[in-house]
Length: 469
Image (cartoon, rainbow, N blue to C red; front, side, top):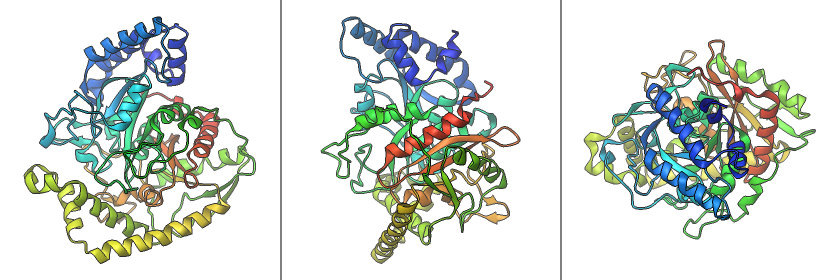
C-alpha cells in the first residue's frame, strides 16, 4: 500500500491496523505528513503545521503501546483542529490579523478530549475570520480551495477541515457550526459533517446557555464521525447545557432496519430558494430512502419566523462575543463582521424577547411535526460550490440575497431548533461538484440520526469518489 492509499483509509481501519501492529503510529503520521507536503500547497487547508511535535508524539504513542498501556479509541490517529479552537502551545488565530501571533496556554475542551482519546495533533485548519460566513478565506492565510475544483470555494466556516479530509491530509477533524459551518463545507467537499445536539459536545464560551453554536466531528465516513463523537461527547460540570448521556453509545454498531421509518422529504422548502443543480442531485436520492424501506412523503413543517429568529439571535451573539474586537480593533475587522455586530447593537430588549417567544413557538411546531416523522431530509446548501474569489452568494436563480448569509437558510433554519443534523455526500453536479444531503433527527436523538446517515451512505457510497489531486 502506498502512502496516498494509506491516507484514504477510514479512521476505524487505521485504528484497527495500529492496534494489530500492522501499522505504527509513526508510519501513519509520516504518511499523512508526506500527503500534506505534496497536496496542501495546492489547497491551503492546513495553515499551521507542527510536524516535529506530531512525530514526537507518534513515537510516544508507539512506545506506550509497546509497554502494554491501555490505548484510547483514537490511538495514533492524526488530527488537525479548526483555527477557532484554542490549542495549547500552538498558534490559534481565529482567522483574524488581531490574533495572528496568539498562542493559547490551554486546550479547548473538545481538543483535550480528542488528545486524551489518543489522537495526535498535527496542526490547525483554515477558517474565515471568527468563523463568519460559509466561505473560507481571511487576510492572515488567504483562501482554502475546493479539492474537486480549485477555482471553487470549499465552503465554511470549517472549510479547511473539510478540504483536508477530502484530500487525505487527516482522517478526522473537528469543526463548529452556528448557521451551517459543519454541514456546508462537508457538502461542498464530499465528506461528512455532524451538527450534534447542543450540549452533546461541551463547549466553554461566553454564552454558556446558548444553543446556536456547537462543536462537532467531521470525517470521510459516518462511522468515523460516530467514533469521533464517542470521544468528544459527555457531560462536563463547567458547561451549563452539557448532556449527561453516556458517549459510549456512539461507538456501537450503526446498522439498523429502517423499514417503515417515516421521512419528511423537503427538497422544496417554502421561502427558501434552491439552485436547480442542487435539487436535481438531492431529488435523485429519494429512491435510496425508499429502497431502505422508509416511508417518504413530500411534506414540510411550518418554518415561519425561522429567518427572523436566527438573524436576531446571531446578531445578539456577535455583540456578546466580539465586544473587545469591535471596540479596540475595529479597523482590522472585515466588513461583514462589523455589519453583523452593528445589527446586534440596533436590537432592543423587546426585539430579543419577541425572537425568543417566536423561537419557542417554532420549536413546539417542529417537535410536534417530528412525532410523526422521525427524520427530515433536505439539501444542505442552496447552491453548489461557487467561485473562490466571490466572498458570498449574492443571488440564487434570479433572487437577490439581502445579506452575506441569506443563502444558508437551509442550514440555519435547522440551527434554531436544536435538533441534530448531518451532511452526507449525495452525488455530483454535471460539472463534477459535490452536493450534500442533510438529514435532521429528532430532539437529542443523535445516535438514530447516525444510523440513518450510515444506511444512506452504505447504499450510495458517494464518499468513495476522491478528488484528483
